[in-house]
Image 1 (cartoon, rainbow, N blue to C red):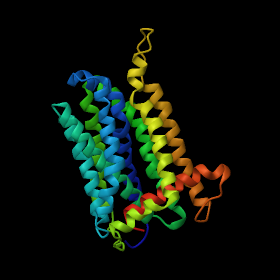
Image 2: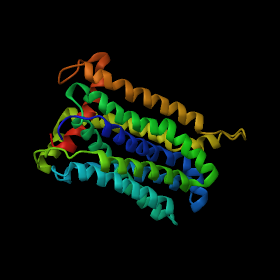
Image 3: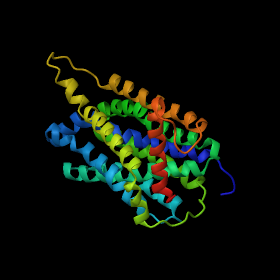
Image 4: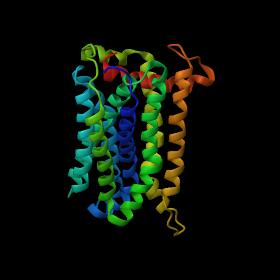
Length: 296
């Protein structure tokens, strides 16, 4: 790689857009899936659980096991796995198969995002790395604010599987672009798995993970059941989930894009406490992903 370039960053962000759609669209599809497979709503909601658990628990292990000199191939493989799993989910004829493919999609999504963040940092000059990471995270958040409502409108007209086909199509478009434009990265020094796992012995890392876990429980718990909750208001009025998903996504987009300039402007390994504590956590989360993906 002769010099940093930004064009592949936006292709990675396109894949992150599809990832954002896949992460959140299932919540809006639960009533349709519940009817299509004749399963209770609590069981249908386990599709979100399968995706999220595989994303959060399985992907770090797969990232750690990827060879340090295969970063480009690993990124393309993860995105390809994500595309395949979403297409297979759309073709699933029974609920068990759908559950398995959602878990596989979660692994592909988690590995892709971690390696995508690392790749975007490697493709950028040091002073622009925060912005590059923000573009990736903004792409993911945009998948929620723009992609999820669009895919739900499509699902209402063509069936729940069409939303997953849209996710797969956008992921495939990103894969083709990256296969053509993504350069080969310099080989990173190999780091033993034990050394990577040693990060979990750092109290600051554990604190960041705990905050992230609690935030995910609070947000996904509500988000997953938003459609059934709106349908069970008791006043007999059918409420669309689209406005609520738009507001949710707008907040995610604003937060993701605003963090980039702050990361680039604030120097130093650790940021001050007080009002900056939130941003310190966000920046540290990005560093943790880079550690796992690059073995830094």
